[in-house]
Image (cartoon, rainbow, N blue to C red):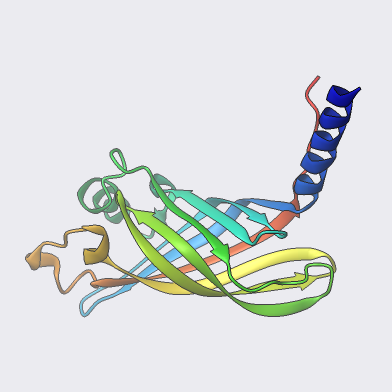
Length: 185
């Protein structure tokens, strides 16, 4: 009987946790490098994210190879020469939103997510500002922040200094769905 109670309490706890989880499988991440000679834009809609509304935990991940550029040669150089996407396939943020946002009420909340940003195999502690919006029960997040190439050991050859900025603007937007805990058959 004691064992059955423990199992039931565990299942109830798992269901409570699942009620607080939100996922996004198509977060849009863009990068912009504004340099003297040429601007570089790229975008990916393959970002994935999990948000735990109860704890504020937030995880983002995007495969580097999913970024699309205006020019094919830019994508090739980005993946092979700068980001080394074969060696470092993902950019990852694992952190926690510091402010509590009431996801049961429509509104826009200014939030700060503090955690670890890993790019090009180098992890940096970061606090990233953003907005969490709840509208008609739909949770979405957006953020814009800068990443310094040198902080993540991304080398820019001197000859390309006027083509690629030392700081890259990153924009993230994600719309979340409640996590569906579907039992397997």
